[in-house]
Amino acid sequence: MSAMAKAVLHSPIHTSVSWPFSLPPPHFLRPSTLPANQSKIGRDRTLILHRCSFITAAASGSSSASAVTPSSGSAPPVIKKRLRYRRQYPGENVGITEEMRFVAMRLRNINGKNYTRNSDSDDDDGKQKSTLSEDEESGASESESDGDEMGGTWKPSMEGFLKYLVDSQLVFSIVERIVDESEDVAYSYFRKTGLERSEAILKDLEWLRQKGMVIPEPTNVGVSYGKYLEELAEKSAPMFLCHFYNIYFSHIAGGQVIAKQVSENLLEGVELEFYRWEGEVPELLKGVREKLNTLGEHWSRDVKNKCLREASKSFKLLGQLVRLIIL
Picture 1 (tube, rainbow, N blue to C red):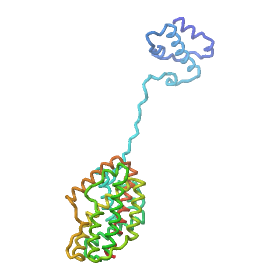
Picture 2 (cartoon, rainbow, N blue to C red; picture 1 turned 90 degrees about the vertical axis):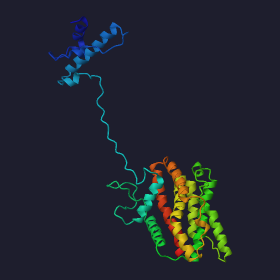
Picture 3 (cartoon, helix red, strand yellow; picture 1 turned 30 degrees about the vertical axis):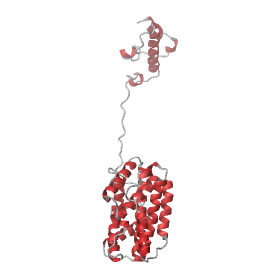
Picture 4 (tube, one colour; picture 1 turned 60 degrees about the vertical axis):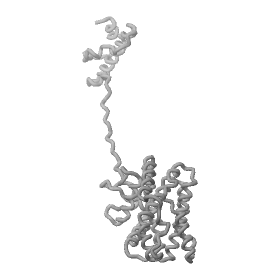
């Protein structure tokens, strides 16, 4: 036994140690790996510290080998928590406009078994639940019902159609003014799309005035919707742009039915400027859709959910405008 080890064994701090006790494995007595420039004194001191630690542990009466065996130096295995990925919303992999289309489809089946009120989360089957309030449900039902009526047999009145034109002109003019004048860069992508309607409606109203028609003032429906759009544009560009898209899309999709009925029943076959576009309408709408989807890629899921709620509101308010024709 080396002189250093004897010194340790006969030191006063170990007089109470009970003998015999299990000696540590050989590797425990070796000093830790030291830098090359470590002095001999440093190595001996390390050996003394390791030996003292073992003797103190043995004196404490610990019978477990694990209590005195030092760590081998390797980290314990890391148990990774399995990530749970959120289920995608219907149409989310395509873009925000496709998500809004699913909202419209769901409103048409508002009494379906997969429809649940006031919930932003997925149900147990992974199907998205509706985010509509009771008022929005009622309005959405009216909007879809109106669409069904327009697709069937109905007869517009000239008085109602004039109110519809005036309110539509007000809404379109507000939308186009906001897009043209706003300093928000998001709106700049939707200027001069070719879908603008306010100037075309003004031409139609002037033509009808010359025919002896009395042009009414905007109704509360159009005024309230226009005011809401102005407030929304200041609050959130994404939510406003969802109304922007649905206003043009609804006019293009459902406007053709209205135009045909009005032309046949009220205007002796004359087609109004409101229903004419320069260029291919599907291509014009496609350009707007692609730009909105591109912007939507930078929106959080929370913002997208708010946009889907605004989409349901736009269907409700646009449905109220259409109802003016047949009242």
